Length: 342
Image 1 (cartoon, rainbow, N blue to C red):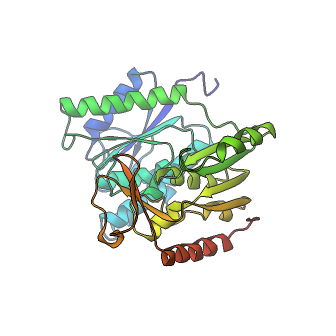
Image 2 (cartoon, one colour):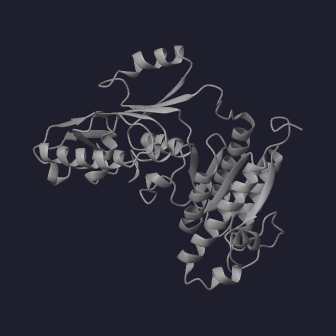
Image 3 (cartoon, rainbow, N blue to C red):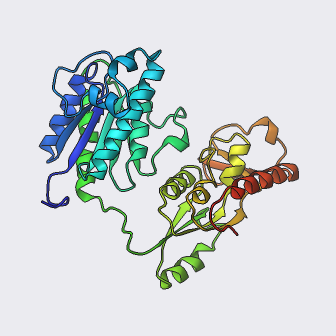
């Protein structure tokens, strides 16, 4: 049976020793929606009251250790890091074998920490959903968020099911099954060019370049370089998803250097070069720092020209000295490239 014809297989990831009621409810909803739940237990101390398809012992083994060693590793932080390593290895193997059509994970901060690693390990186009007590929080660094990750806040969900929790879990479980049924994996028949820009208000080159590149046999993906857009671009580059890149809007580097939350992480402008992808780079918008428009402007930017693009994002210009510092950072990043850079 082809992947499109069979019921989608959905990994259900969580700590079955503490959240069995919720996980089993999610599995029930997935089954009723036409999916096949595949239970992945990432517990450490206890045992779930059901037999998972992939046990905590399987997870520890995939990390090259045993659950006893995980328990003795130090504390919950070291333990969850080891379980995350094993979960990533196991899920990658299942995905490579064609046994994964989507994933959903449930957790508080510990479970979310693990789930972010697993989601990032799955290719773009495999639906990935995290139900979390810290969904959309600034606790989540951009570089750890998969480019097509879906999240929902686990509202009112600690310590058992209730009407609010059921509403959230059923919505998430149904969503991941629907996404798995409808998802179209990226088509690799034509080489893909990655491009960055800021909408089309101040940087409009993609309006000319995109149709011309398409005439020449390329697909073109333009990423909105406002933090998470750059993160998505870097994730695809790291996975060698581009034939070449036109990275013309790199102000996320300036944002990171100036401590803005509108950032793509510390590896912005590095993954294409590391992956051996040819790059054409331009310093689009590096003369400004983006920030939330709903926050007070930091004192260090007092007196600088300021513009609120909307109620969400605003920008200030940076000083000549700050521009020189960013230029050195950009040069250092591009020096590490293993393919041609212009």
